[in-house]
Length: 258
Image (cartoon, rainbow, N blue to C red; front, side, top):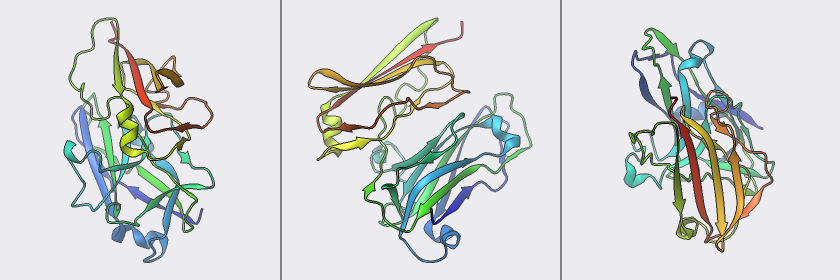
């Protein structure tokens, strides 16, 4: 690593309400002093969560995206495929380190001139007066890596089931994405380094399958999911190749608590 730069809250007062989404954005111009000038040869090679200990219980998760600017954050569903997610954090995770030949290029095009962090606060007891300075530390190199990294979300990334009731007892939802999904963004095979399986409080088990030629080619699963222990469960697995035409089936299992 040639260094790091931080994107963190400045003593943000968490509202006394059950749920709050805070959008923290910093542009290249605001950040460049942290990496010593006007260079745009910045490649992210790792990320570390910075969590304020006093407010840790309220910080539910981060989603980190590269966007054109802090005034053009590509909001709305119509821009969902234009936002580039570069990191995510949930309880139980300690950060991300990429292989020595892989990195996320940053600030090298008109589409990634700012970093946007969506911070979800969960304040169920509606406690007031809590100030949070959480955020993310980005580790970088000034030397471009051989391979560019990217993230792919499957399952229900647009939260299409938001507000749908979880039935009594055990239940499940299955999400599928046919071969046209991978064909949209792949014109050659890519290497999947790891997978993270993410649900919320009522999630108990999750399975993600890659299907090729009508057969299950790869399976990643967590048999016992606990958000508080590891909100983004990373199965132990070897890297594998994803090809255009591969399809996905993601199955999430829930328990309503009764």
